[in-house]
Length: 319
Image (cartoon, rainbow, N blue to C red; front, top):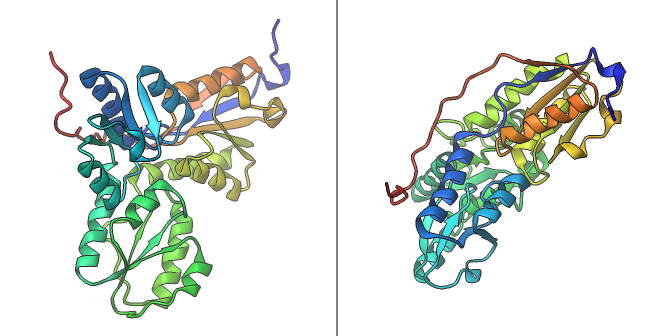
């Protein structure tokens, strides 16, 4: 029996471009899959390889075991560090336990880690803009034993008390809202005019591109649906951005989470996906909207991403 709503027959789905997987996520998933093929299961992964339920469950079925503490990895086994990166202490622990390590840290996160090491070596205190408790933030803050200060908002900036205003630098989490980060950076520069900034912004190209795509799409829509998991920072920022643009916005992990009332009577439905959400889920959401009666789908113009990151050494598969 058809569940289609005839009132949605003239409704159009607008697809954001770009959306979905970025190069860092593609690389991280491939590292896990190759390690399983090369060494057999189980392969241990510290923290979720990327923040997406579908991806994690798929890799779990293939033989990955996700853990939060290295002590959960039996001696002599293989562990993969997630795309979010890890602290120096975690690296040292893995080395001391003799674990085989493959590092799936996104190269753009590694760039921030290198910035932190150099700035600390030059004697700078470092302010990190990011979300407390996020694994990327924990990994970056853990690149230095001291001299690191986390701020989440302008109020945190105002509360900062740093010893030498002339020896301060800042870095940012790679998946922040571009606009929110700019406000906090502005507050930092106002308080510490000599603050040193990264040579190139830390917010990654994929985060920037997906937010720009939502800025283009959302004003054309009556509602926006973001495909992504609740713990995905970049997916949450996309939903928040659409909301700030005055468009009702919802985030879903799977098509069955769509409430038909969200789209009832709407003329244009925007669909995008966070950088850790696979295209198969975006297409499943479109299929669900078609079941509800939507007939028209239009992909918007946008940046075509063709960036790829090399895999770690030792992951070539036998012929």
